[in-house]
Structures are given as C-alpha cells and as structure tokens.
Image (cartoon, rainbow, N blue to C red; front, top):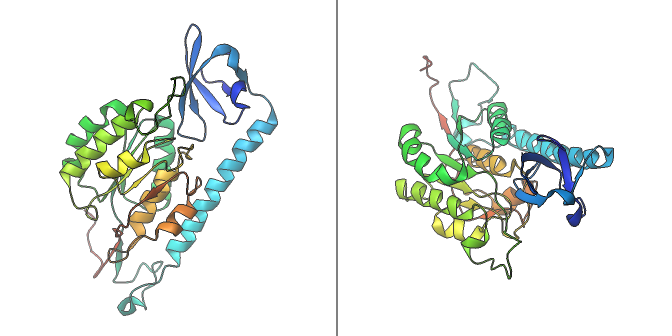
Length: 287
C-alpha cells in the first residue's frame, strides 16, 4: 500500500473509492476520488482496489456527471432569448449581439478537482479564474483576490466531513466538521466585500458541510442539507448555471438542484438572480 493507491474502507462496506494522500504510522489520510470527502482511516481498515466492480461504480458516477453537463450545455444552447433578440443566433459570429456570462472566481482545496473544474468552465465558455488554496487559508486569500478579479460568482470548496470519531456528534456545531468553519470564515469575508447577494453569488461547501451555517454566513448556495457526500463537480455545475441565467431571471431552485449529481440532500440555496447579460453591438477589439 503506497501513496496514490486506490482504496476503500471495509468498515463502511466499500461505499466510496478513495486515493491515498498521506501514509502515517497507523492511520492513512484519504481523499474521495469522485466525492469531496477528506477522511482518515486505520491501515487495517483499508483494502486496495483492483476489482473492476469498484472501478465500474466510479465510472458510473462519472458518466452521470458527464450527462448532467451535456444536458446543461444543451439547455444553454437552446435557451430562449428576449423578444427583441429573437433574430439572434448565438452561433452566428456575424451577429451584432454578444454574450457576457458571469465571471467566476473558484477557490479549491484540491488541486485535481480544481483542474477538472477549470476544464469544465473552459468547455462551457465561462470566464473563470481558479486557485488551489487550502481550506484554512481561503478567507485570507479572498481578501486579496476579490478586489483583484471582481467576480460575479465565487466558489469556495474543497474537502469536508463530519468528525464521526467523536462521541455524540452535534451536527449543529461547527466544531463537528473538518472544514466547515473555514468555509464559513471565507463566506463571511466574501459577503463583507459585497453584501448584495445578487451582485456576488457565493457557492460554498463540500461533502457533509454545515449547510445552515454557510447560508447564514452569506452563501447563496451551499452543501449539504442532508449531510451527504457531494460530487466533486456539483459546485461547478451551480456556478455555470448562475453564470448563464439571465440577469433579470431568478435561478430555478428545483431545476438547479435536480440537475446536480448529488440532488436535494447534497446542495440547496436561496432565490438568486442570474449573472448573464447580452450586449450590443459586438466589440471590434479584443482586450
């Protein structure tokens, strides 16, 4: 057993596929391959995975994620235009109209997930800046990055989890979570920077995060109402949806939640206007 190996926890019935991050004397730090879960486990509880059944299960999760983003791409491509723009075809490069999706600033506590997230933003033509920042340093990073990039949407995510090794876990207490307090601190900094929840949309949280605390701190969308594992790309899905929802339209919450991989127990939020604009005429220079 070595760093980078794929493993499952036998005591949990092998429910989640992990990659070994750090090997310690008795315990191992592991990160979810498809879910934003950070955990530690005793070595004797881990089983190396070479079984195709586990890999098949992971591939099924990734297939579901791919389908979700394909559906979003189709929805964006076929979205109705305001009446005065009915003649505009978004695929017509000669059109005088142009698109202005909301700009995203994405902070991620996982370098691999950040890379995947940035690839999706690029594929969906969402202007985005991404930074790999440990969860404990996100609040400080936002103090510098928010005025520098002036985003429409900020994503604050990484790894989290309920500390189940404690006796009598209190889900209402932030001390019962690995990183929820750090996410709350970062959300507060972002909300102090821009208090209007429609001017700056905040997407925050990871697996099993303290949903209520994140919303009260100022997030528009957060995880996890049911304290479940969320898919690594769910925060990205929400950010892209917000980026392409028109400025005068409220993001459809049931539609948004049902489109995520994790569903209603994984993510939720409050009524929020989108950040997408259409411009006229098309600029002649690229700046």
